[in-house]
Length: 244
Length: 180
Image (cartoon, helix red, strand yellow):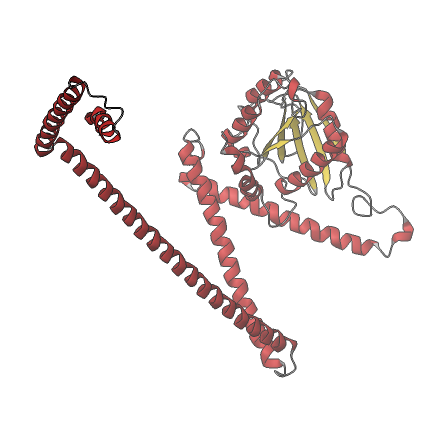
C-alpha cells in the first residue's frame, strides 16, 4: 500500500524583499526594522486566525451531538439543514456587527457634534442637503403615486366599458336567436300549414279556370292574335300561378 | 494507512501546503510551477500525488488544501479520484477540498460529461473549478486563484476561514445546479 502512490514535494522560499530570510545586504539597515515589523504583524494575524480555527474545532468536538452528526452524511436533507444553520449563524453575526457599528457611529457623531460649532460645520451642510433631497424624493414619490392612481382609474373605466359592451353584444345575440326560433316555430305551426293548404287549393282552382278559359277561346276558333285585348288576356292566362 | 486528517499537525510558521491529486503528472507539474511563480507573501509548499492514500513514511507538513484534478478526457482520472476520496477524513470537506476539472475546452475529446463532475462536487459539498490546464494564461490565472484559496485555508487571511469561504463560494454556484 505504501508503494502504490508516489509523492513529490516542491517548495519555494518566500518571494523577494527582506521579508523571507535573514537580511543579506548590509546597506538596507534602515528599511529592515519596517519590514520586520510588517512581517511580525502579519505573522501575528496569521497565528491568531489559526488559533481561532483550532479552538473552534476543539469546542465543536467537545459537543457530543457534533460527534454524532458529523458522520451522518447520507441524508441530503440533513446536510442542507446544517448548511442553512451555518448561513443563519453568519447572517445573525453580520446583523449584530452592523448594529454595533451603528451604535458606535452614533456615539462618535454625538461627541463630534458637541465639540464642533454648529453653524459652520460641513456636517450640517451635508445634513441640510440630505433633508432637501429627501423632501424632493417624497414629492416625486407622491406624484408617482397620484399618476398611478389615475392610471388605475382609467384602467378600471376601460374594464367597465368592456364589460358593458360584452353584455350588450350578449343581449343582441340572444334577441337574434329568439327571433330565429320564433321564425322557425312559426313556419312549423299549424296555422301556416292550413293557410298553405288553402293557397294551394286556390292556385289549383285558378289554374283549372285558366285552362278552361284558354280552351274556350281556342275552341271558339277565334283569331285571338289580332285583337290586342284578347291577346293580352290569353297571354295572361298562360302565367303559371305556382311561381308567384 | 489511516485517513488524512486536516488538523492533526501544527501549522508551520508562514507556510501553506497544498496537495494536488491527479493522474496526469505533466499537468500537475505545470500547475505546481505556475503556483510557485505566483505572487504570494507566505511560503508555498506544493505536494503532488497520483492517488491517496499517501505513504506514511514521509514526514510532511500539515496539508491545508487538497485539489483533485480530473481530466475530462479520461475516465481513469475520475475513477482514481473517486477511489482516493474514501481515504480522506470527513473534516477535510469543510472547505479544504476543491475539485478542478480540466480539458473542457475540447468538447470532442471529452469522455466524461460535465454533469458527472458537477454531481460529484455537489455530493461532497466542495467547490468545483473549471480550467484548461494546457493553456498557459488560463493555468496562470487558475494558479493565482488556487494560491488565494490556499492562503485562506491555511488561516493566513484574518477574518476569513475555510468554512466561511465555502459558503461564500456556494452562493454563486447554486444557479447552475438547478439544471441538474
